[in-house]
Image (cartoon, rainbow, N blue to C red; front, side, top):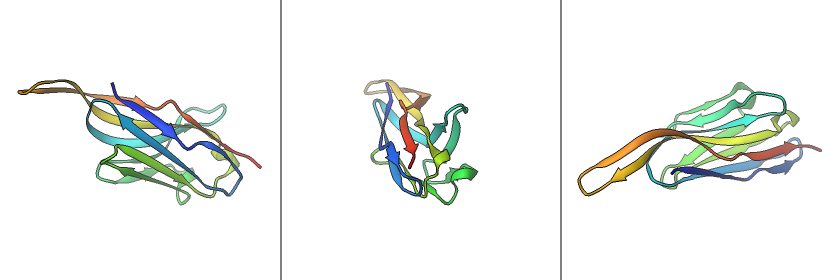
Length: 128
């Protein structure tokens, strides 16, 4: 089973910076798109940023120019660098990945399935 483990959340003052990381582990054949979502208090979960396997990135308008997403394909890890943090960035941040998970394998064949995996979430609090 594939798992995503996040780290790096915490308390930061407005204008400060924070780094999040998320590592995928398990029976992985390939990791495709990876991304970060967040759920602010009283709001629905929303996309923050995503990065395709070949590096193409996408950002939500509220974080453009302040956040930067990157990935290390060798380590199956995605990062989110958050600068100029605002009160409204306070949220639980979730890592997300589209993964080809190995179901079974032997010397002659390999069986896999495509799954969407979520991390457990990490809290980012922007407060003075």
